[in-house]
Image (tube, rainbow, N blue to C red):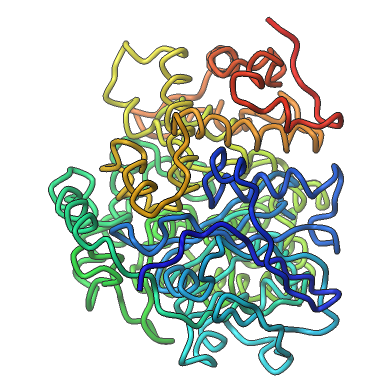
Length: 586
């Protein structure tokens, strides 16, 4: 059945064990849409600066968009909170069957706003537009696959041992672990609140079949649609390697000689089938492991393969499957293991670890998830903190504490700008100029780099507020206004301006937390030479020119603070509070 136009949220107080429905202010729905935007608005309104991410007062939002369940492609949901890894705003996304079922279970609600801490492990059971808080002590300690299997009549998003032990980059897993809201540690926040799982029971929304069919056909004919059908994200490793931008063996090389054994062709040969959440648009490649089937993504092959020097396909998939079952972000976990391998080589830690040793890597992943050894415990805090605690050189790059994905900016310098300005720390999903810069030649100036990064960040802020499949977003030429009208949701007068507003709001959140221009940093390792002829060290002066251009184009001052004029243009003057530093006019 068609879903009622969502206009409320369900607020769950774990301390008081209450759940109430509350309307979302109409201006918030129009200005921020849903998903990322609405979650950011709640976070900015309800958290004071310095709120402890793993404390009682942090807010954990599970957000949908007004068109969830209708758009073609994989349905997605957003988890929004303050990151325990970085201290920044955090939004993380996952797909599969859970988002559609959650939409049906929520009825006319756009999401859950969870506060407080439960006295004992619980599950939140969402059904018939309400939430029941039920005991879950018997599930505490279970891996993600076992937790999902415990509810055969429902769709489940849950944490594994990593979330329970508050690993700072623990994930929220759904579909038995096939899908992960990965980066930044939302799973640790969920674990700190003693929520083992969100259990949703409901029929996914139906309707708008003609509109869905038209967009599905358009996507199938689009270049992005053809690429997804052929390769999904697994081809990313092959692309990065080709341009000399694939982080290899602890970021000390940028091409991986073993790539052909773990890349897209190896995946096609090993796959038993493709995911089919939407019959017309195939998903990831499903392969068998000793522990059951698994769906590796591009980040798996890049970070757990090339970055760790593992060149055997089954071993890489097994490492990815271990992360999925334990509830670990593959990017941060892979970089943490790479950090340990470098530290062992340099005598910083006393451990038999070396690049290419998949079995040692798997053992260390288990230690990180359970924090049962001294090395696992410190790596659970992320590479920035591990380096500080053990006095190790800063060899694994991060921005604001979030480990950098395996796209090396020495293959495209503007990726450094994308990482530096990302609101949640180093992230390749906000903007990927690495897909364009290598082919632009001399036309790629600091100003053009800044313009491309800004445009992609604004556009994706809209798509993640809808909450749309990243790839299907390629055919939303009007950024989804036709879909919003079709479901009766408010349509901002200018959706691209709404994306800029949402991006600026997350910047305000981070500024209030004390972040400055110094945190929009270029990791030192990117200024060093690397092996590939096509890769060049990032020049710090060029990076600063890109950052200056970025700030100026955004209407921020030279320290990265939005000016009063910019806030007025974005209808944010009535939102910004006195705690938040704002910029002076240029």
